Amino acid sequence: MTALLRAEDVWKAFGDRDVLRGVSLDLAAHEVVALIGASGSGKSTLLRCLNLLEPIDDGRLWLGGDDISDPRVDANAVRQRFGIVFQSYNLFPHLSVLDNVTLAARVVHRERRAVAEERALALLERIGLADKAKEHPDRLSGGQQQRVALVRALATDPEVLLLDEITSALDPELVGEVLELVRELAEGGATILMATHEMAFARDVADRVVFLDDGVIVEQGTPAQLFGAPREARTRAFLSRFT
Ligand code: ADP
Ligand code: MG
Image 1: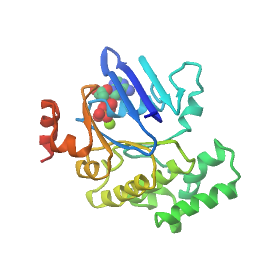
Image 2: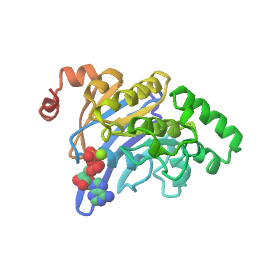
Image 3: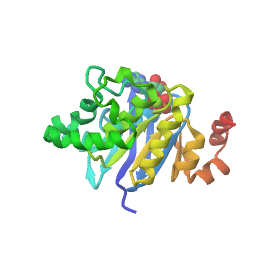
Image 4: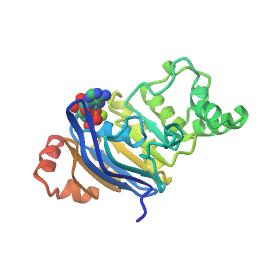
């Protein structure tokens, strides 16, 4: 397998606290990988290191065969190859939904407004929110905002989608519509690495589940293997909280 995205023995500390302690992870094209682990285990830090929002202390990162941990690399150019969605505050509040979705295409990729807007409207149509194109984000529900954030992340055709607990801040009744869109993207062939506490969803949609504990990948496997027959005591202890 040639990995689309690869982390190789990645170390990251904040002050004297080692948050990632030798993490190695491969993601193949079109693979959907769920990253699970307790709060504070390093999931967000790993995602942020992968798209160069945080510098790593040691190790290497590869994207599509390029060494993106090379200090000479243009970090902004690398970040544009990822789509990232966080727990909340993804959209610019002062811009319309349409402008949020087209911003990167217009400003970063220098696409003509008409071209960017046509594609953005098609994406919004697909998620049933074309009628909200001119609204500001605060007129949308949290679930609608996260779906717009997903569509915005897709608007520039990223190679990999990084999703960081994107349903954690939502009211329970809004979680389903967001997960449903992630499922559609996964089925459509997107390459996705998602930190999540939605175990049922991970079990259902992920090709592989990776359990991170205290900055170390303790265990990984198919959902059936990891949820059905975890090998490590630490994995069993973590999963027991969800049953
Ligand atoms: P998770 O996403 O799994 O909850 P995080 O990656 O957010 O875990 O955090 C892992 C550890 O790193 C935590 O102890 C957190 O307090 C610490 N941490 C994260 N970001 C920073 C930062 N910018 N400065 C200092 N400590 C941080
Ligand atoms: Mg986190």
